[in-house]
Amino acid sequence: MTDDVKPPEIILIGGVSGSGKTTVGTLLAERLGWDYAEADDFHSPENIAKMRAGTPLTDADRMPWLRAIGDWMDGRIRAGKPGVVTCSALKRVYRDVLLDGRASARLVLLDGDRDTIAARMRERKGHFFKAELLDSQFADYERPTPDEDTITVPVTGTPEEIVARIREAVGR
Image (cartoon, rainbow, N blue to C red):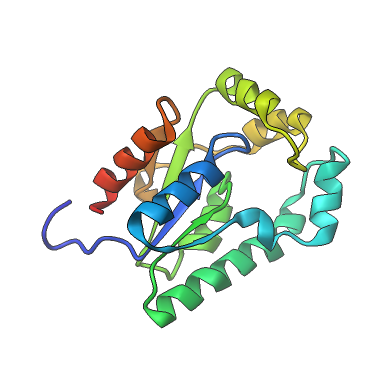
């Protein structure tokens, strides 16, 4: 990071379900001393019920959720309080909703192949997101284009190693 680029005040951790967003986001916020918000907490009860039933969310289901996450980001930015928030951010249109007009926010996508993520999901207990929905996430996932200025971090290594890579990439 060059001296003339200000580090982000909001770090948005994205990736498919099971990529480690919560683990990495929580640890990153802890290491930085920043507030943390979990994307799942912004879902409506209806969205959670759909996912528990194994029904993929539609774009229409996701838009109020994305706007709520954006509102949280705006509140942090207005208050001058940095934060880390998670959100799958699978499609360009979702990333645009989350990042447009928020110059102090930066997206970090946790990247892993389907088999690695599926193995992680099989080990996860008590989460409402059904493992059989993973294919729908990979089907929806649109890799960021260079103009999006996204940081992509592989999910290999320990959470501490992933957090260290993120901190280096964002200058924190």
